[in-house]
Image 1 (cartoon, rainbow, N blue to C red):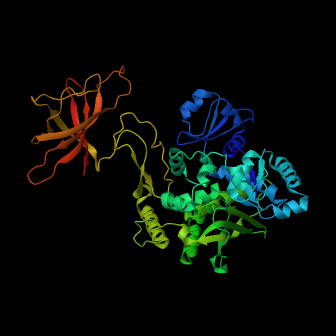
Image 2 (image 1 turned 180 degrees about the horizontal axis):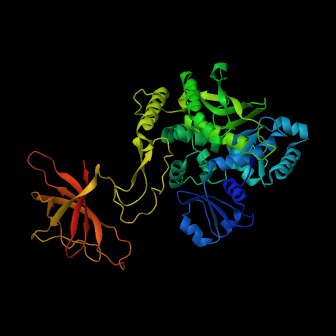
Image 3 (image 1 turned 180 degrees about the vertical axis):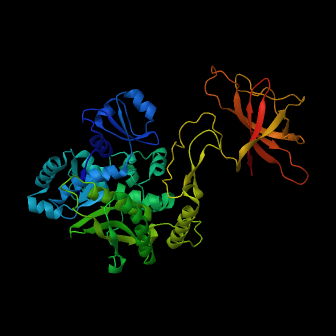
Length: 520
């Protein structure tokens, strides 16, 4: 396998769209975290995963761009087209990474080194970007070889991988951060140390995900080479009338097609790992591209790749884009694995993709009657306030977090969260043993242990336990009353069990208390 890798592709694509010169620092952010940056930014101390304010503190001149998969795919189409002009069987792994079989092309061009030189020249001339090439057995080893610019001899993939850090297992899209963290805590710092473990022990300790990572560390392919040949009826074709000339229309249609495509595979006990996307335009032009994925594709993954591919086709540079709209689209599973590679949701209770699709259509009809705000989906954001962390998003809109969950939120409540968060806090009063009102001191401490709580002027209830306070004011020099939250456990009434509530306090002299939530 030959892999061509364009370093820092999201940053390269963002700079190209934004008109930023190549010698200026560029950072791409998602949820205020760096997801990609160029070499100029790294020399100034910017790193992936860094918070935006820290990145801009290290590099004040940093050009900031939001993450955009469509933008990355659209610009990478020129690179894929340049590679396709020399080699047959191009597979786009993700924007910035393309893989091709090396044997036939190397023989035609007079060897692997000659082929690589031609590829580098062709990509530089057609797309104007720098890239690196690596050759090895298997996609994982070839990807790491491309990052090092290595040509790994047949049978030597395990030796090449052995000294590399185990963190290389957490490639984009692989979602192995927890596994890598566990391996490091166990003292397995390199791929070679992980590969040396017996396969039986890895399967017993780490499960199927760990076994797949173990195969990669040993220089093996992602899965055994024996594949089931896709049946012809698994291909899904769709005619469009009117023709598709806009990316947003293609993205909308792709969701339904992807669901039907994956449902058809699931009925045969299969899942797709290499997806062929082929289209025919109104003028008879034939377009096509294959997308490879290390993990079996879900409906969302299929829809994303169709959308990315239409980004590349319909928004290409003049002279490279189709001359007319797309009238026919075909999704072809060019490589499949057994369906057991996918684990269904434990709580689906026999549900199916068809059920999800019917429910989605019903929600859309309700929105048509009541408006976009008639159907809302909750999204959990980061933050300190239990009520403010839940944001309602209209059905169909992207359910993306606006603030990261793992950010340091001073004053955030520990788990568990209140089972019920009151829309309108209820007035309350908290008293100590002497019947005096309890408040918050300038050092964010209680003036006395709480012993009794009254809610909305009702009868007082005994406080049998409490935790906190969690202060809400970040700067003690800042004017204004001290504010904090407490968790109180109230004695049960009669046969009722004890009840836990979340309360808020503001002030020391004349404290104002409210009940904000109730725990189950």
